[in-house]
Amino acid sequence: MNVIPLSAIDLSIAAILVLALAGLSFRLRLELSGQILVAALRTTVQLLLVGLILRLVFASKEPIWICLFGAVMIIAAGREVIARQSRRLKGWSGYGIGAGSIFLSSVAVLLLTLTVIVGADPWYTPRYAIPLLGMLAGNTMTGIALSMNTLTLAVSQNRSIIEQRLLLGQDRSQAIADLRREGMKAGMIPSINAMATAGIVSMPGMMTGQILAGSPVIEAVKYQILIMFTISATTGFGILLALSFVAWRLFDERHRLRLDRLQ
Image (cartoon, rainbow, N blue to C red; front, side):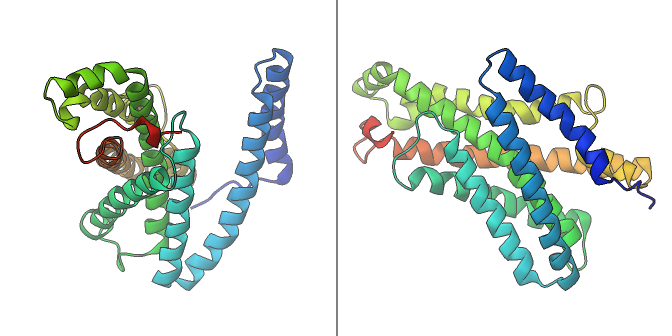
C-alpha cells in the first residue's frame, strides 16, 4: 500500500482552517471559539500520544496491553458521557451506568465480530481489535449520552404527569415508557442518519482511510458495511441498557419518583 506522507506544514495548513473558524466564531460572538480551540488542541495531543502508544502495542502483540488500552478507552468514554448531561445522576451512579453500558455492549459485539465475522487469528490481533473497539465505543458513547440526557431532562420536566400516572396504578416502567422511547430515538438518530446517508451524502471514515491506503475499493466497502451494522447494533444495545439502569435509579423500591437523585 502506497500512502502519501503528510508533513508538519501540511497539517499546519489544515490547522489554519480551524483557527479561521474559531476567529469567525469570536467575531460573531457565538461563544464557541474557546471550545473549538481546546477541542483541536486535545485532538492533536491525544492522537499523537495514541499513535506512540499504538506503535508499542502493535509491536508487542500481548493481550494484556490490548486489554489495558481498551479499558482506558472505555473509562474515558464513560467520563465523556456524564460530562455532557444537563441533569446528571448524583454520585458515581451516572458514570457507572454510562461506562458499564458502553463496556457490555461494545465488548460483546467486538468479540462476536473478531471471532465469528472477521475471524482474526488470534482474535486479539491489535490492528483489528483496537480500531474496532474505538469505533464501537466512540459511537455508543454518543448515543448513550444523548439518550440519558433526553430521559433525565424529560423526567424532570414531566414530574407531575409521571406522579399522576403512578397514583393511577401504573408502575415505574409504565409511567415513563413514552419518555424512554424518546430517549431511545434521540440516541439512535446519529447511527440511523449515518447508515441512511452513507455513500450518498457522506463517505464514511473507515472506507475513506482504506481507499487512501490503497485497499481494493470493494473490500473497503465490505468493511464499512460491517462497521455501520456493528456500530448501530452496539449503540442500540448500549442505549437500552443505559436507559433501563437510569429508569431504575430514578425510582425507589416503592416506585416513587426520586428527582433528588439528579443534580
